[in-house]
Amino acid sequence: MHKIGFGYDIHRLEAGRKLVLGGVDIPFRAGLAGHSDGDALAHAVIDALLGALGEGDIGSRFPDTDPLFKGARSVGLLGDVVGLLRERGAEIVNVDSVIVAEEPKMGPHIPAMKAVLCPVLGISATNLGIKAKTNEGLGPVGEKRAIACYAVALIRLPD
Image 1 (cartoon, helix red, strand yellow):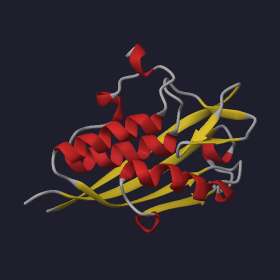
Image 2: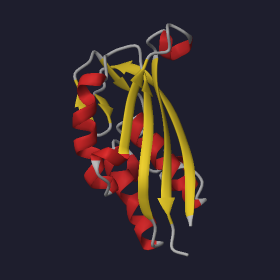
Image 3: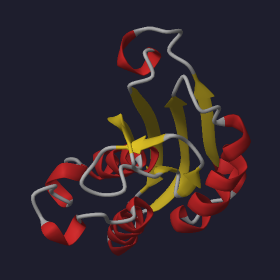
Image 4: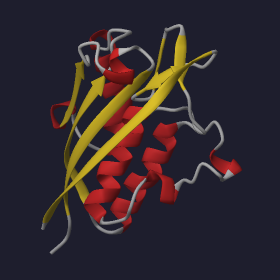
């Protein structure tokens, strides 16, 4: 049986924080605010995978009120979710995602993101899509105050 999950996340940009997306530190003047490292791409993928399992969202599994997750690397949290899938006998077929940001330009960082995420997800680079878009100057993303990410995941569960 196959199931699809959808994920979304948005974080404000905040001066003095490292910008982490897809597990990659990206040189920039600001990073994403959050209880963890603020990696909105990893968070969107986590939500997509949890959604495919019918397990709620990242906030219910890794609450921002828990000091255990303060400053956590989101790729590590993603690894925990992949472990949950494996415990249930599920495998990830593919993940497709979109990063929406006016700046910095994401295209040059996508190969590094794939190099980090593919081993965690247990899929090949051909089964992980990461695209970069702008918001054409509209809303908080377009005004360079935030970065948003979307993800969809297809998983295979045992019959």
